[in-house]
Length: 305
Image (cartoon, rainbow, N blue to C red; front, side):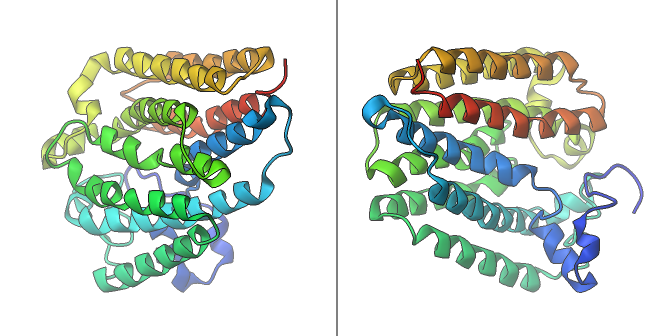
């Protein structure tokens, strides 16, 4: 494989049987960043819910955290497989994605569909461990997930659709704990959407030249040289909404202090980004795993004065 690609040259896949490699790449097992980005809103929400209860420090809800990570792993893999099935012709024409299993011919559409179904069943098995409200709310997100692969064909704002889908866990995490919704999870959801608009715009700059040729739309193409101004605005909105979510749930001073650290990370992303450097865009995008962790630590301290 030649040219720029985000498929790792070396990963843990070398320890797996060779026949599994195309499927593991379809599910992005070798690129877990997306799983973490899908997981963090769930972790933020259920952790804030647990800290809010009685406004005193609560034990970490480990069982929920583990289930949400496993669910994120399965559903991110299923979503990526669906996306690759929908985008196979576009992916053949884009340098970064041409080596993926479907456009390179290492997996057929039928094989990909079966693999997607198996991953979805794994996600369903995890989902059935939660209460009825959480199950119903999770199923409601499937329409957004199904629309996302096609959004880039009709709008320059597919990142909005991605944000709606990827941050649904902010709502689900809360209902898993309480069985109902209130203001904090909605604020977390809006914060997550703004966050996704920022990090996925940076990510999309990896493909902007090829996307312009094949007719795929993105906020990277829409914003152009003004990208970092827009990303700064999205990240500022994300941070303010996260703080508002914490305060509405009774978060204390330690939460605010730690959120300043998380905010510093977002500033670092903007200041070190280079939208004309594909490798740098990928590095900055991946660093959002650390941002999610910093926010989670802040939320875990929400009940501290």
